[in-house]
Length: 148
Image (tube, rainbow, N blue to C red; front, side, top):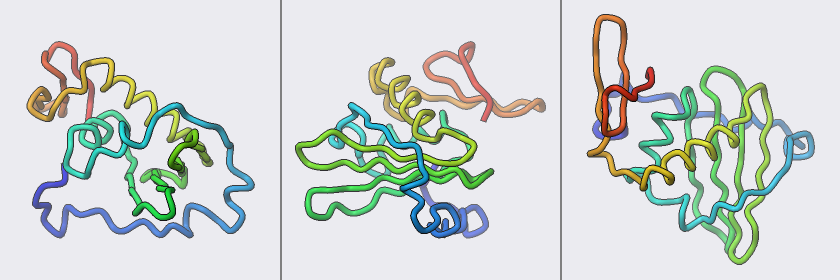
């Protein structure tokens, strides 16, 4: 969650250079996606980034400002140096680059489709169950949960 974190709870800023070396795009796996910027870039405190954070573990997202009709959205792995970038361009198919042991964009795209196929649920439809065995989050029904 993003609301009112204490300093000790805040993640350190990701150093882009630690993830993407010079010429990193030349070495990355390249593809495209049918996802549109308007569907994917919904705002920092909206339901989609919340759902992505629950479904894609150990990953941080950074949405850059739009310039000259292009907006990059970055994903950085917190447990390794995996990274992904989707470049949305006005009037064009979005391009994707990803590198590292995890296919972060593949995970993010799967999480997006999971969220979309369940009716784009808002925050209020999610719940959390905490037991001595751990924490599990769920959508609509605690019987259908996953570990966080």
